Length: 298
Image 1 (cartoon, rainbow, N blue to C red):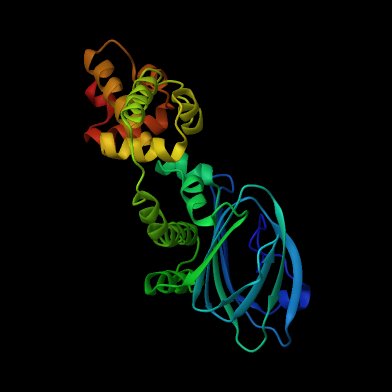
Image 2 (cartoon, helix red, strand yellow):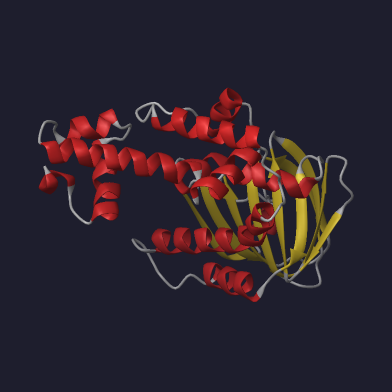
């Protein structure tokens, strides 16, 4: 299993022939990749390969694999276990596979920008709290029943094309959410005191964000502008406004677009562009938020 490849795992030919029940799909321009399989080998095998930057969630249902990355101690994964790997830059790894038990695995690779752009939270920033400053981050723990069940469903996908990709992407996202949930919860529970100065900066960030709906700053840029790191900014928004920075931005965008359309003075496309959306994406989220199509409201 190559946890960093940009495509199906590339193994030696004799190993590749023994990789069965193989699954592989990608979406969002390869920002989300789901791969899985069962690997049977006759003798212990080792190899080297790239560890591409980004977030990887590995679930091993059975079998043994060891991974050595950078200056980390060698990690041994003995199924059923799960592993979170996050590296900000490309790296190299060495891995060893045992031969006594078939290796049944699922790998979900996520570009951290996807969690921020599409789901409204900064996974990379939250994961740094686990790493204690060590890079790349490697975190191994026992696989929960939920993760084992989802991994089994991915490996044994019951659907064929054209629905197979939809099924695997859905299960991959569910697996990623289930694996990240305890990490995110732990990050949210970190006690960070907010001074009166911090609260003023959070409100300043709110004002800055809602004043530029068509071209809002990134989370990192917003933090730099008001003098807060992204962790404190994210937690501060949750505590003060009860939701994420992304959710605040989206709500203000949609409310402003609603007022434009209700006035009858702008077209749907104009309203979408003025609040920073493409018309197609705008129509979908507008209908989801207000229960009516934007063209109907106008």
